[in-house]
Length: 201
Image (cartoon, rainbow, N blue to C red; front, side, top):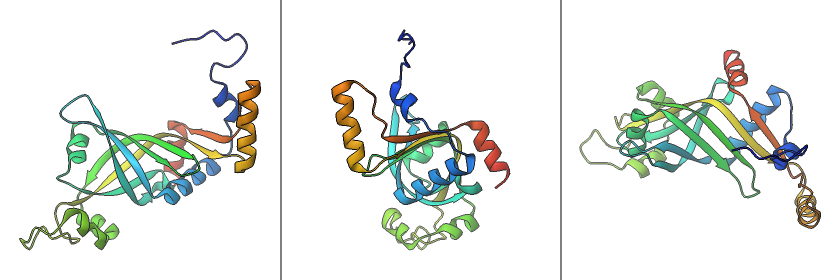
């Protein structure tokens, strides 16, 4: 879809709020933000339909300088079946200030016991339960416990650019004058940038 807007950008929010900084800053700020949020929403394509499904996930760890994300999972859960059918995912994070991040990539389900043990948390028992058979007990040796490893392809995120009073003032002014509010530091990380980052971390 294309809109003729003359010499004005069709998406003025992006034009006004986009910020170019060094790759180090872009990725380090993204990683810090995701870790501070801790919880995010993982979107997969349902294995039995064309529908999309989102689930809350707790970030367990990061790799490759922060661009690869690890999450615990029950290997018998629906999201695992989804990923076996289509490995493409989106992982999103948001906080109470309206700051957000969106990471697109591919996911694999890892069952290597050393990897599971490295990131195991006793709290996982509350999610997988103890089936009472001496094997499926929620421990680090429970074969149901695995790791979803997301390898990022691209990412975009927005951090607040000003304090709350300045942001409110920008929005009020914009509502009156039609001038686009400058309230965010909107950043995008390309696939080539992530590949470059991963190669050195």
